[in-house]
Length: 432
Image (cartoon, rainbow, N blue to C red; front, side, top):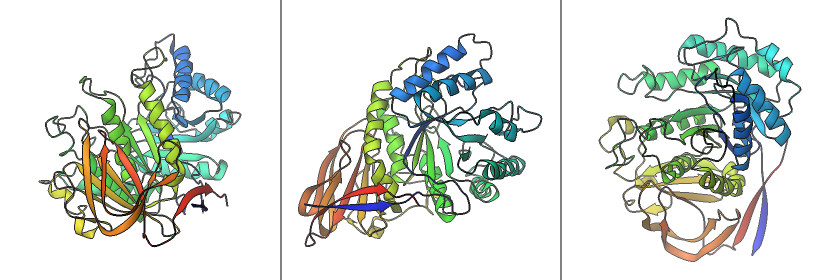
């Protein structure tokens, strides 16, 4: 079968300098993020944690909320490993939400002092700026970075709807996200949402009533309107101490982001999940390492695709009025006919060359699902392999798709007219 090498190009906000070359697998922090200034072993633990994250297959670490001792230890370890870092020092610049830990931001001084570190690929400017004043300060620091170190990523992340006074109920959250995009004009549109353990999470209905899907849809729409790459922080640890988080839930969160076309996945947070409390390998280490390997094999394809639409079955937020403006009928699908099974979502994507893809997600995080989907027209169907990233024909000509999805699993398929000559696709980055 013919193999076509198709070029893909770095992506980025056209009004900003920085460009993203590869799919990002990050974590908000490799270590303890709860300001434990009295831990005499903090440096040693952080160095171990950085190595553990590196071994787990993260492509980057962020130093969100790290104390100065932790930050310096992390830089030493990352520099030795050749591990990318997004640096933050809240004592010197920026803030988190409405909290500011420095009297005056000295980002320029920090960049000068840390320029010797090759591992630094960006600076975490502000974590969830809430009000206009914080957004304007974030914008000011962004602009300083672009003047002084344009090759580095200035980074910030938006609030989730459950985390401040800007809610779906009062109608202000949509304006808040618009303000975030327009005032800061960030390089990437990034947001977070951590539902397991919240009141909205009822195990009997899983995530059918979670507003995660609202925030995903709104953030993605905002990213598209402003031509920004889309990143997503997913829940990777038992933040609310419920003893209910399982790795299939983590897999579902990661794949939900991919369903919506993200180009970066950020794990919140490796500590007490991938990393144990001494910096060694945590309970989810092996599972996280394996799924990172899969995403690295899929990364070239994921970076080459543009999302067209996301369609959910009728069980998702079916009584939620805020979902109405984001809901897409199966009748609008270009490829699928008939209703989707319960807890199944489908998204449709295209590359720059007109090749069509669909993704099928099992939103059930507890049970396998046997899937049967009817196509509107017969197709040759290729699966993008998680084992090596290659595209292989699974149907030469079919009007129906049948397969099994594990809890939280996503399948990526390319569709082609069956009368056209078959060909495999490999995407390769071409730098401009």
